[in-house]
Image 1: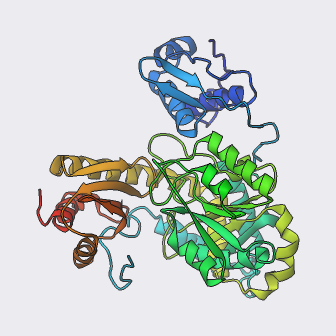
Image 2: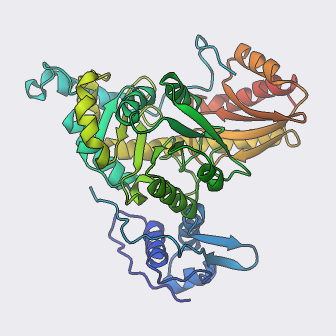
Image 3: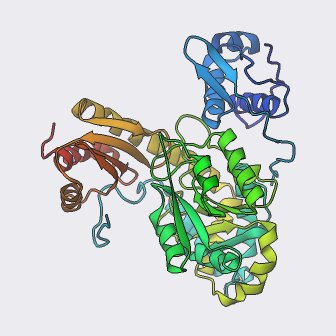
Length: 457
C-alpha cells in the first residue's frame, strides 16, 4: 500500500498530526479498506522522508482511537469501520474521604500557573470601564467567554458547536442540575459506567432519577448491556474514562451514537482530563462525531488551570435550546463575571494553548518519575494498569491490608487515593500525582509503600 500525503512543512501543525489526519480521512472515506495493511514504520519513514518517530507517533494515535490495529510480527492493519457513517461528521474550525485534609498529592503543580499573566489580565479587566463589570452576570455565561469556549471545543477537541449552545457554571454538579431541569419531563432513568464518577450520579439521585450501572468489563464498555437496559440517558467519559483511564475506540463511539439515535436518547460526555495525554495528541471528543444532535458535552478548567477557579461549561444539543431558554432565568450565574472575562482574555490571547503545552511537560516528568520509583521500590507488589494520560494513574497492589485500613492510613499520611476495587489480597486504586513536588516524589513513593504494605519495600 502506498501512502502519499502532501505535507505543509510551514504549518504550525506537527508533521505526525498531518499524517495522522491524512490516514484517518483515507479510512473514514473508505479509500483505505478494512484489513488493509499499512507500510511498516521503517517503510513509511523511507517512503515519506520522515523520521521514524513521526511515523510512530501518527500510528500510535490511530491505534489509540481505534482506526488501525497493531498485530505483533504482522504490522498495522486498518480496522473494519464500514458499518459506521462518517460522511456527516465534520468539526468546525472555529468510601468517602474527609474534606478537612490538605493532601500531599492533590491540586495542581504550583509552578504550572502563570500568575503574573493572570494578574495583568485581571487588572486590565477591573480598570477598563468598557468591560461592563458593573452589571449583573449573564445567566448563561458571558458571551465573550462562551465564544472562546466554543472555539476551544471546536479547535482543540474536534467539536462542532456555537456559543449559543454553551452554558457556563461553577462546577459540573451545578450544570447537571440545569440539564436535569431541561430533560426531566422526557427522561427519568440514567446509566452510569461502573466504576464511574459518583458525584455526577449523586445529582441524578437527588432529583429522583432511576440509576442503572453498566459495569466495565476488561477495560471495555459493553454496549450490549446498555442496549438491554431501560436507560435512555448515559453519563460517560470516553476520551479518558474515570477512574480507569481507558479510551473508547472509534467503533464503540459510533455504536454509542447509534444507540442514542435509535433510542431518542442523550449521551452526557464528561471530557474529564482529556487534554493531557503523554503518548500522542488528545483523543477528539464524542461530541464532534455526533450528527444527530444527541450529545451533551461537559468540560472544566479546574484541572487545566486551578481547582480554585470554579469555571466549568456545558455544551447542549441544539434540540435542547428551546427548553433551556424557557427555564434559564430560574438560575442565577454561579461564576464570577470578572473571572469569566479574565479567562476569556486568557484564551483569546493564546495563553491557554501555551499553558497546556507547559503543563503537559511538567506532568509528563512527574508521571515518568513516579512510575520509575514505583517499579524500582515495589517491583513485585505494584502493577501499573493505566498511566499514559491525565493527572492520575491506576495501579493494582498485592497487599494483606483491607480497604478500610488503607484509607485510614492514607488519610493519616495525607495521601489521596481512590479505591476502585478489592479482590484476593489485591487492591486497585487511582493515585493522583499532580500536586506532588517533583523533588518529593521518591519520599512520596516511600510513604505510599507504608500506607499499602506497612513497609517501605
